[in-house]
Amino acid sequence: MAAKSAPPEISDAQLIARCLVGDDRHAFAELVKRHQSPVRACLRKLTAGNHALADDLAQETFVLAWRNLKSFRQEVRFSTWLYRIATNAALMKYRKRRDGHVSLEQSQSGEGTGEPMQIPDWSQQPLNELLNSETHDVMEEGVEKLPEELRTVFVLRDVEGLSNAEVAEVLNLSVAAVKSRLHRARIALRDRLNRYFADKLTRRDGVR
Image (cartoon, rainbow, N blue to C red; front, side, top):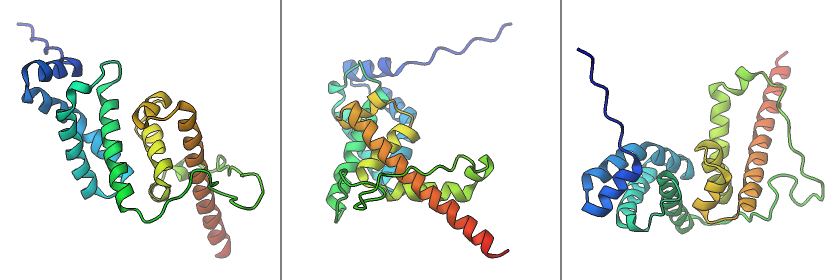
């Protein structure tokens, strides 16, 4: 006897409809199950690796999503809408706790020198060196140290894989502003990696 094929997975849109029409909490629980891992991972990046805070914000995100589900617009992806709630929650928490602020009008390198910003190039480095765990740790630390406005755009665009348009939707920015902030974030991280490789080569040459 032929094996029965698995029933098609219910879409997010269908689950949302069940929530709205029948106040179906089981349907919403399925939405949480589907999206909680990426939302939590994103928040851990946005909170500079603070797992406890990220988990609290993830819970807050889904509570707010349930309360405001009627305001969800079907023309955007449900995941994008969740990222917007999560990001806003993280930004509000960050702004309450921070002591200082780095202006986006300030360059990430060469600040105040009057010299054009130089974009370092480490493209000649071996791929396995770029991808090793030590370099990964350097990048992780670099992302954590980015100014909040730059880190948020970088995480959503380059880590979570949202399009420029989706990041603009999440952060209520223009696409041009997203591209500008993303460019600054990438330059800052390139500069950090460039220093890392330069220091590594200096140490290596020094022991010869």
